[in-house]
Length: 293
Image (cartoon, rainbow, N blue to C red):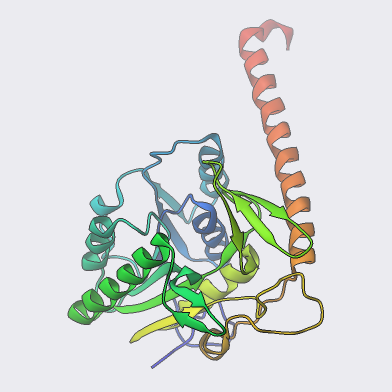
């Protein structure tokens, strides 16, 4: 049975009050937390901050302005997830020890949402679940581990297979060519992408997935075309019919629109950072020279 989420979809029947996000200060985790807070949910973000970056600290401050937000800086496996209506796993998804620890702390009436990858597919005339990358193979194994564990515990699970997601605070640099997209990560590794989705479209889908309250579902998201630069309307990418049926998902943002949104959002973020730095400098000067006020 699939019910709906009152706080996400107007006029529906299910209410989600508390969502815990493992990896809540990561790229997708942060944007999801923002969306849920805007909808009135209690959100707890769990992040060890092992990669303690200036950006993550800034994101914590951004979310921390909302009274419904709680941040836990600790290892994921040390957190109690039993009080959450929904647990979203957006952390290091190759670490089965941490992932299993979280799963087994979920109550039977909890929904577990796992972010996987479309790398589990291989294209040879048609799309098949037959990963060729090591990451894709690892994720396919994790998906099976989740299904087995959730069958034992009775926890409902939604596995979302994502292509490359881009937007504000993305952890890689996209390189756009005429007929291809590639990205370069923090290590300098560059790979070609077969599909991209703008972060807002992904967050809408994840929020809608929280309406599912039973069973196990594997859903992939995509733009509907294997070439985001193709403006002819041809669609030979992964079919996202299941995403449409279960989540009401259709990608709304074209690549051109998404890149424009990303550029504007990044410019505003940089402006806010400069204003914050100026404010801190003014406060510091006031402390050093109180008689000048």
